[in-house]
Image 1 (tube, one colour):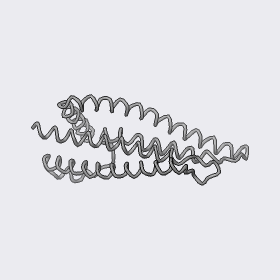
Image 2 (cartoon, helix red, strand yellow):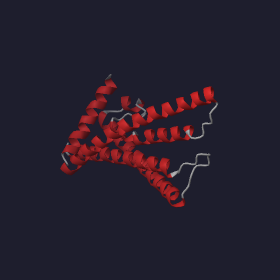
Image 3 (cartoon, helix red, strand yellow):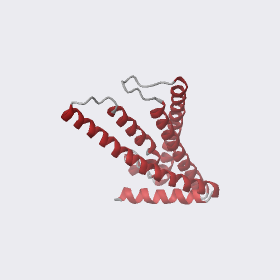
Image 4 (cartoon, helix red, strand yellow):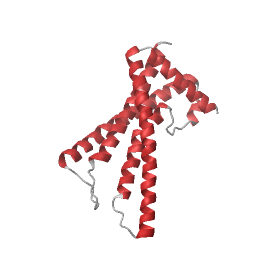
Length: 186
């Protein structure tokens, strides 16, 4: 319960800090709306993946039907849902974090620790997004497909991965800017 209250006050603080910069406040609101739409689409993708996998099991068991596309289609949907919802999870500070230090450190030191983690996360996610976009580009230009019988184009999962990591990087960047803006006004 304590963690939920702290996370809620942290989110409110980030929103207030971004509100001090009108251009970023508008962008952050638009980004949050887009993010909510993506979460709905990701939820539908997970439901679709579960339906496809269930169909696959039933078709193989009862009708001895070959199922060559279902596994890959489900994996593509799950990859998309995972990467495209990452920014939403980050906006709620819902990613796994180690809170042992947070309990031991004074509030000022904890803010510094949190900021350093955000910067490291931003660097990693931005690099991951860049590499994902290069994979997407290569798959698109070279017409790469998977080696399965179905052979779907690989630009689909690479594109979902690249877009998701880019959105996650933007979300972390907004949180870094909010932390800088909040500390500058104190």
